[in-house]
Image 1 (cartoon, rainbow, N blue to C red):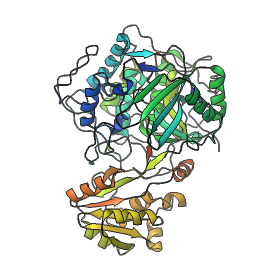
Image 2 (image 1 turned 180 degrees about the vertical axis):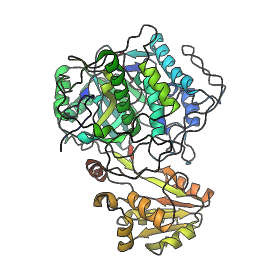
Image 3 (image 1 turned 30 degrees about the horizontal axis):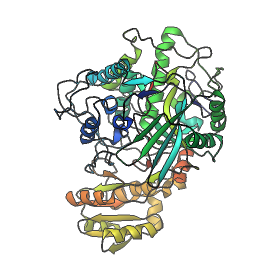
Image 4 (image 1 turned 180 degrees about the horizontal axis):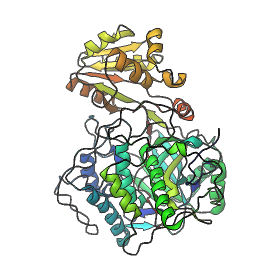
Length: 561
């Protein structure tokens, strides 16, 4: 399939992972300055993380996110907090490493989630605080840049868990190139937030999570050899029971071997769709800014970073798909574009910060020219060989407040086989054994299993413009058949709440809201990859890949990169 791109952007000729000078915390216990990904952190989690260490990375990724606890004083080497309290960054429902929380969703990084809560902290102050704190920590030696560019080996281990991968600068590609494959739609709100943060800080503060089928190739062999034989730069035991270790690969021959192995492979975005879309929007903004001032030529990126004229172009893939002020619940259309910069105050401030000259004598890097490649042509990413280290793909459950379980089961009987079970454990066992599609309904009044849908009604409900594979996903059947046709509601945040992984938490929420929990089995990784390879997107909140990379072990800044 031909690869596409816009004329003014570089066109990578394959999957490219570039070394970079990592920025790391110089503290006695590195675990205490790390955090879960930003969209899995509640306000309570922020307080707990800051109690672990006043310089926890949460202060960079969620600036101004918690001011309610007066005992949490700012670090003496950091700029003071704004005085107005109030949360500014909503969280997800998935339990964090530090403290479990209630299952009500708030705004995780994913499509169709709740919008950000109002804040009294001005948006400009929020992002400039992160920028100033990042600079202060670098100046104070709290954060220190590695001397030599590296691709980092990253290992997560724990009871019944081992995952290893490579952290580096991944070259950004258009989805139409079929090199880096998204599988979820994105929404403008989270993109506006991350765009403002990345533009203002000029940094990638946490990696996205990519999976590729490496077939236990050369890159994976090197990863395992490094982990087995070399001394790690970092070893951190976090409160979730995992050990995180980091090594640096600086040898040019080893880096070349990694890229030769990766070059012709595809990578699936497992986690970080909004951040990846933000990478590409920031790339366009920066290139437009520098093209206007320097008329820099476009570039063709190879694994060796040699620059050639672009070979393939297609401007249509960069159409503005997020101009609407209020996005509708996503329905996969097979589109391969990301939204243009959201038209919001946050995005406008981010663009202004990105275009402005750097302060305090910090020069901004130039756009690609000659044999140089601009830092915004890449994004921080963790690549994991899924054949060597299969991911933990968990289900995301739904709760329908105000729909009592007896009513939900009664309505389903017209198109599904409905079986009642004594308790949740018995129902979950039956769900596990049932062929797809199957759903477990649970609430205050008991447990019911839905199986064997009426084939005629099911076929009539599923959209003809989607592939059979997409139409067979349990989340597709839920969003296109059960919710609108059986229960007469839309799959949106007003009608449907989200609970990650925890079936008992879903049932508790259903009981508390007088509603019904819908328990799903997780999708299979190969199903998700096949849908993504066909340029489709799974329905909202279909996947939760893990283990996700820990934030704060290694950061990337444009000036140092």
